[in-house]
Length: 397
Image (tube, rainbow, N blue to C red; front, side, top):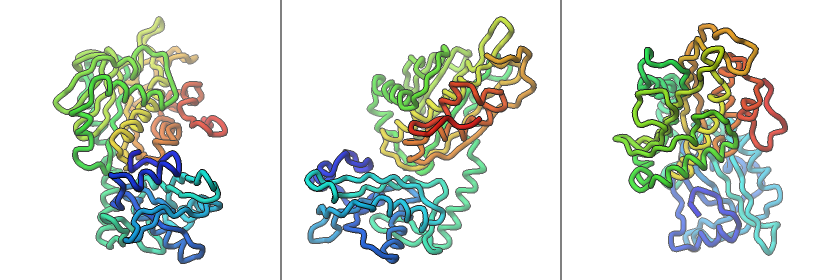
């Protein structure tokens, strides 16, 4: 079991606590022996949660912290505990904090056990409790200074302003405009708080088979498919480049023959698909649902890459659909070329929790305006891509 993923059972947690490579509290992991009742304890819990909002982490309730018996199991009553922790995250942390709780009941007495609380890095961090902003040092929570808070807010504003930068740079590396006859899809995902070398092992040790598995598992995770000729699963040519590894249906950016998916040495995921449109009897047709499904599949690959590298921080994701104008919208009543629609750009910031449980909502954020502008917001493949398993219904167009 990786230190950064919840165990499957209480037995697995206890085995991990006594293993030779047993965990130590660090920047991403904290233990709490128990959670007493009362307002003071709720405030302290709120601080324990808020500290992880910057870089993500896990709080494990039911593990002793003492120096005499470090990391010893200390089962706690589970009834009402999850609801209480979730309520504190929503009501006592400002702004409210998204978390995920995993109860781990003891096999011989399911009324007691442990609670693993996953706190994904928050896109609006830092968070405060009663007017004080918190972060985490090497092993303990700490108050952030006014200067630190100001710097973090300024950095986020700059980042939001420049979020389109990576995807626009990627578009600039496409074929020159006079050689582009089809509509193209582009996506770039950047791990915002990733340390240097996050994908070194991937680039150094990953074989072609393993990289294909990363892409294949990401597509499977997305749970949407399209029968277009050039989707992510059609990228069959593996190569190592000066800046990463890639799969593609072509080796050079010299034609419009398909799809490329690349992981760079900085941990960026970059995708290009050059057949969002195709020639038809009435003229060149653009199929907006292809771009929407591709966006969701890419988010699935990002989620797989995050798991593979054990990165629990935020991702900045930018998409673009270029060269839209002049194509007939496929599978619609319209048989005239589209009006002069501008190239489409959009961005979103995704937390680890959103990548695990909300690919549909993220796809909506990135692609709903594009679907609407091309009159495709109610097409079945689009609605499927905008939905999440377990949701009551498809989203309204």
